[in-house]
Image 1 (cartoon, helix red, strand yellow):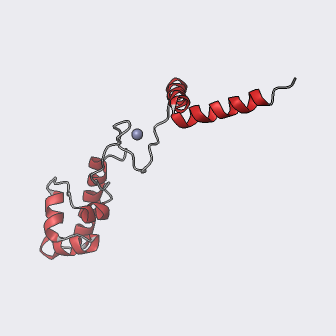
Image 2 (tube, helix red, strand yellow):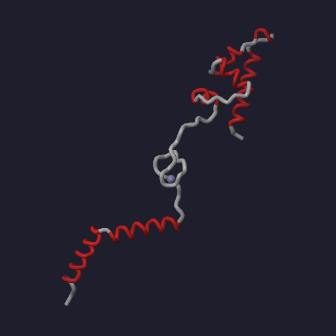
Image 3 (cartoon, helix red, strand yellow):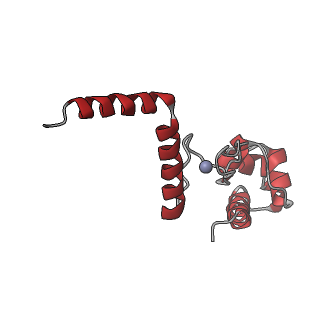
Length: 129
Ligand SMILES: [Zn+2]
């Protein structure tokens, strides 16, 4: 399990262990030293020990939590891709439909029609006889 709560629990265990190691007697133990050893501020550490999940990316990286960023959804499929290009795989049916639609559009275009007419004229003029 690597969900956020597991990561946070692990971090708290580590922090408690460090805290206990900062002094033999309770009055010698220090959350400030513990926080410094972990790379966070004392305030952050206290809040995390109290159950808070930090939102700040720099703190989340230190703790080992995934960092969230706003991602625009794909204009084609509405999913969230990390890559710029759509990576959603098409089913063979959808791929066929897309290719067929592209073929129809290609066939109907004036450019294609004039090229077809040209090649038709060429073929007729070169017919054997
Ligand atoms: Zn997509």
